Structures are given as C-alpha cells and as structure tokens.
Image (cartoon, rainbow over all chains, first blue to last red; front, side, top):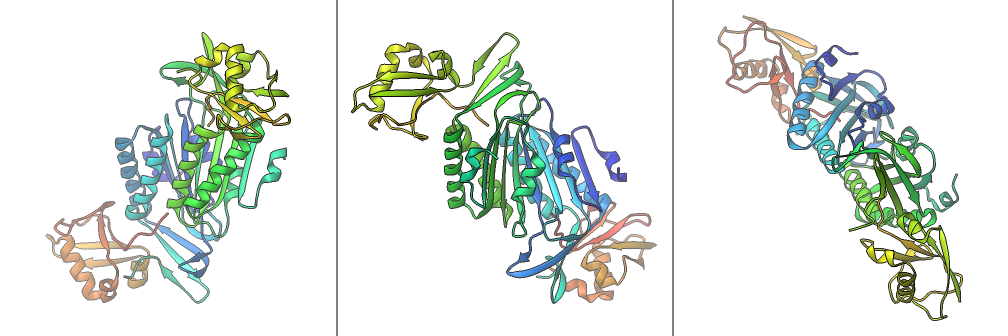
Length: 148
Length: 148
Length: 80
Length: 80
C-alpha cells in the first residue's frame, strides 16, 4: 500500500507502482454485484513511435500531485456519468516493449457510462497528470513532448 | 479448443465456453509489440434488472452460427478502424451474480481505434449474435426480450 | 421434402423440444415455413419478433429451403 | 524567503538536479519565480511549455508563494 492510497475512498483506487501492474487484481477490485459492465483500458509499450524503433521507456511521476490529479479526473467522471467504481494504476521506472504503463478500469450498471468514463479518464490523464515518459531509441533518448 | 476455433485467424479469437472465462488469458492474447492500447469490455451479471432482484442467469448459444456472426462483426471492425487483434469470448450455462458472460478485447496501435471497435463489437453482438439469456427471479423466469 | 428445425431460447419452450421435423413442398421458402410453424405453434406470433437462419446465416422470407439445410428459429437475441 | 523547487522529467535534466534552492522576496509570485528561473536556466524557455505547481496544485502566474510551499516545475506531461 502506498502512502497515497490513504486518500482512497471505497469507490476509487489510485496507485503508482514501481513494479508490474496486476490486471486481474484490477478487475476483481472494480467488479460488484451492482455492476453490469466494466471497461478496462490497458496501455502497452509499443515497439515504435512515428516509425522510429523504441528500445524501452522510462516513466517518472510526481507522486502526491499525480494522485491528486487522478482524484480530480475521477471526481469529474462521477459527476458526468453514472459509474460505480474507478481505478487508475500507473507504473514508474523502466518498461520494456509489451509492458503495461497504465491500467484504467471503470464499472457501471450500464456499459455506455463505463466506456465514456474510461475514455475520458485516459484522455484527461494524458493532459493533466504529472507523469513523464522518456523514450529510448537506438541512437538516443528523449522526454516525450518536452520540446515543440 | 472448440470445434469453432478452427476458423480463427491469427488476429481473431472467437470462443464459446461452458466454464468461467479467463481474463488474464484474454489480455495476454490480444497484446503485441505493435500495440499501444487495449480496450477490454467485461460484462458482469447484475443483481437486478429494472428494479427486480436477479437470482441467476442462464445463457444458451447456437454455437456455429454465433461464431459466424462474431466473425462478421470483427470483419466490420477491421474494416472501420485500424485495429490489430479482436477477441470475443462468451459463456453459456448458469451464471451467478458477479460472474462474467462476455469478454471482448481489442488491441490497436492507438487507443481511439481500440475504444471505438470494442464498443461497436459489444453493441452489435447484442443485436445479431444468436445467444439467449434467461433471467431467474425469486418468483419466476423469463427469456430476455422474447415478448414485446 | 422433410426438414428439421432447430429451436433455441423461448422457441425451444414453445416447441417443447430442441428441434421439430416438418414435411414441406420441395420449393418451399422461409415465408412458407414461418406460416406453417405459426399454424402449429401460434405462440410464435406473440414473440417480439423472430428470424429464421439457414446454414448459419439469417435468411430472408423469399429464400428457398432445401432438404439438407440446417434450419433454425432465432427468437430475439439477448447475449452479452 | 528561501524556497525549494522540485524538478521532474526534462526540468530535472535542465537543473542538473531533482531540486534547486532560491532566495526570493517575501511577496513573490509564480510569475516572478518563472522569470528568475528562466534567467538562471535559459533552456526552460525552449520547452513546449511548463507549469508551476504549488502544494500539488497547478498554480496561476499571479499566485503568491510562501516559504513552506511545496513548489514544483511541471514540464509537458506524457503519462499513460
């Protein structure tokens, strides 16, 4: 359990882990007898970006603020759609191709809300949550999006 | 391996199982070094429908035709969006509240295609795939949607 | 010709069986089949709708039936 | 007042450190801080953009800073 998980309520679960994410745990956590559908988004490390071969990625997080921003996104999701549980787990550290940087799961009585909220959460996370990705290529490395 | 799985290609996986679905298998199957995002929809048995308590469900499938219809839906998804792998697993038999009747997973280089295709697949599956659901209540049972 | 019709979901309950056998003229269509079945099983007319599948494909009313076709009654589906 | 600024991602590379200490006037704002940092670390001006966070919240240029605030430089994020 991370320090930040103390802030979690019964229907939200936000965590940042330096080790592999457990998708089965995620699914078991968001399920409930009241839910009819769960949408799960799993980010995976792709072997290329804009045609250039990617060797590995490194993720760095400003952890307490990242958890705060995740809370804000989830609060918006609960306001916008009738969802039941929201989980966001993000990795830090070095990740190889095929590994999972992020898992987002949303349960709801009806699937439309789960789909809408899950997509909103990943789209917004990529804009607001203070986590940074460095791409390692055969000929160098770059912090993604840092320069125009 | 079911009889029907012989029809599967490298990038599709359609199966109907009389026993619990394995979500970890599903995710491992759709992942690839080329994918950047996976969207997974997990249907779950809800404890009520229109305010009435549900005890359990029973699913029946016309298996060979169900697999044919799944193939058609996936073919449409590949035509509409740049997706990489499509998996549809559906349960048959008696399911208790909280169990999983269906898992759909789609991988793609970019997440928008995975979300769009996954949602299209579950929406279309519910309209065209010959699978039937019987709801068991405290005071009786009903084939869902059979009567106007 | 003699044809065998598979039944699923509520159609199975209406037929009281997972399949029924019917004797039909050689040039019969899906429309003819539905008419005949609705005579024998009037409860079919109370369904929200139902389709006929021939060889694992949804069939249209004008499609003709053949002796070895796999024919099935498809009441409103509710998977997922 | 003396303030400590945390750095992440490329800001850490620009500062050459995970944090820097600065001496600022007591009534300084986020705007004043950015100005001062850009004097000392001109590479900040080459970033696509960057934000300042105060006590785990994104701050506006007019927000004032206080001695015990947790201040961080937030270059363009790229999680997910």
